[in-house]
Length: 209
Image (tube, rainbow, N blue to C red; front, side, top):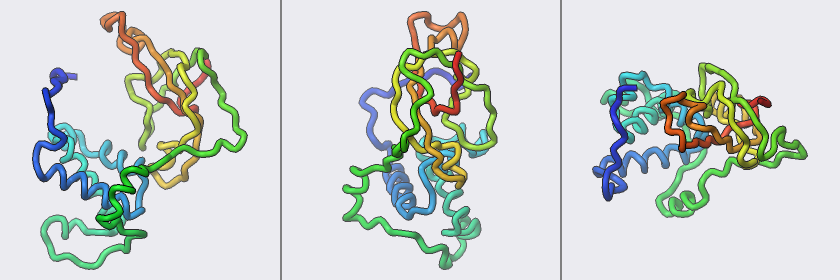
């Protein structure tokens, strides 16, 4: 797409600057307030204007998205972010104290759910095709993998549906599958013939092929 090659950095540090460490801490602490799920935070990053997104570093994207979330949920105002005096905002559901951080990080945010007897529609080895969709909101189906034929490699479990959960429409869990594609199916005859790509896809992204 013209953005240049991916150039892995040898012995890359976890953080390149002290502010990146603080950006991660702020994001985790704010998420710990319980006002939004991880899917909404992902969409906040994805929906930044392209000129802003592509001109920003990894943690700059995190902070810009966090600003949106804090304003959206009433914790700060645009004027306060611009440097104005602070005023009381929304009350968090909970506050993540420093002593609680290690346990919270270890616990993570499990998003697997009980299927309640709902059987998966596909099994390992099934041929499937991803749908061609262009949602206005969040989705975990990559654009490069839409309308493509693949094969179910594994049934992973029953998980929260991000496309719904990111927008306050409930968890709406679905079965999730690992789907394997030949690179040529995704990128045509110029793709490496020895390469294959797998993605994790929610059931509603798929149809029998």
